[in-house]
Length: 264
Image (cartoon, rainbow, N blue to C red; front, side, top):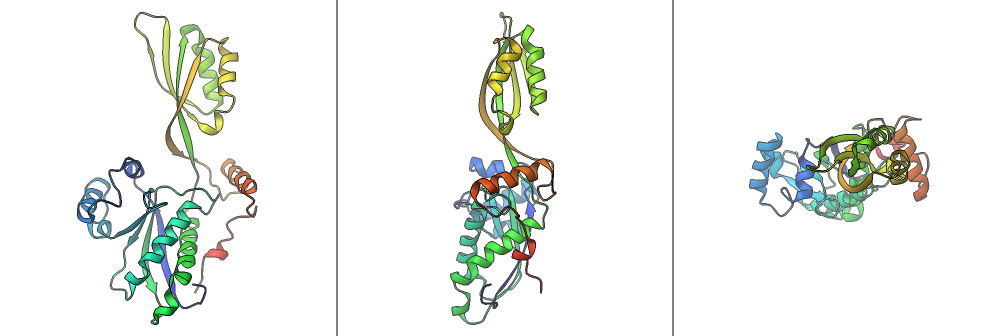
């Protein structure tokens, strides 16, 4: 902490598949009874029951798909800093470490806390910044990556135009989910997933490749993990991170780990 009297020890780990979607849908939320929520997480996602009951908060904004879990054993004064840690998570999860965007599907485990015996030295002014720093450091050391939004594209077209549609989708990292013919008509319905970042100019491209016969419709569908490492120079994900940081006026050289990570 800024006054060098308090320490937090945390680790970050990703959620199991499907848990973030359950939180978005409201099946797992901060309003649930801790015991029933703990049982649900233990049965469906393999969490330890005792840890699942000790979820401190969800973030960002109290409802998002990130949690702080208290996995400590017998630490003094822990409840007094709970509000500060909760506030720190809301702040850090709203402005993630890579590109200042919302974090998603991350679980932060508190392992140990060293606190000053005097209450005046562990107020919110000391504990909120240290929580944000420890969340950033644990996220950086846990191989973070970006999530990109994906559209579900529904295309209606005649059979003759299908080759052009597949060509356009392949060029834009899209993949076809289903295609079915409408009974009694020569038209086909194609459903495909298309990353939002590739969707700019998609309609015009599609029309030009199919002679204006295809009619696309895009709706947001889900988030997917980008494969490259954003910390690796020259990777596509790294370029997106740099571009976003530049647009927001942040320092271009992000993630100096020693800025957040505190070596003993």
